Amino acid sequence: MAPLALLSTNQLPAVPPHEDIVQLFKHCMEFTLSSAQFQDKTEDLRRVGINAQILAAHSITGGAALGVLVSEIGRLTIDINETLAELSSSGSVLARTAMAITALGDRLGRYRRAWDKGLASSSSASLLRDHYLESHAEMVNDLRVIHSSLLVNRSGLEDLRRATVFIPALVSLLNINVAEYRESEEQFGVAAAELRAFRDFIVESCERMDHGVSDSLSMIQRLLAKG
Image (cartoon, rainbow, N blue to C red):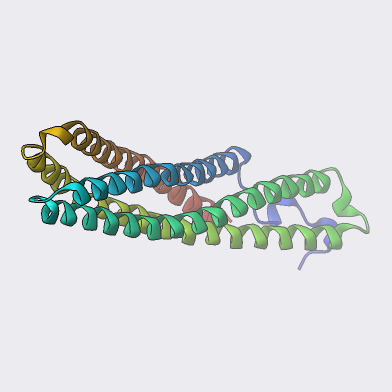
């Protein structure tokens, strides 16, 4: 092994490009913020279920049909809330780790600049090298944590998509019952519209977030390959 004083930056693991770290941080935070927005939409879905429950309670001939609707909306809400809880937990890990990687990237850059300015030829060379290698190893570990978290999130997005598959059938059930309850036509119409809007939001959000996950996974694989 060459003397410490002769070590060059070429003999150290590379610092990930700052723009890549910033872009990865942006993707992770966007995913975390987007998953948080699902909570409000789930509250809308819960309200639809409550309204349907009220309609069913006042219905005599259609109570059974509306009871099915209430049951299905309740099941859907539970399934989605469970998925959102997993996404929220994983999203928190994603955000914390992304911030840690950003700080590590800045630290590695400072170490490398110090090395280039001549500290490598001083008595600080060994300490500087050890700090650099330790920080680099920590960054690699954090990149792997984010990689695992993104895979979990991708699975969660797929679960959300599957949960919304049955919403068109629920809307059809609402529309069928409108014919029997003209006095409640407006309430049925609002419930159907909110269900459709909820599904559209989930599908559109999942598609956008999945693109971000794919970009982030590709970026992480590239960064790990460089490291």
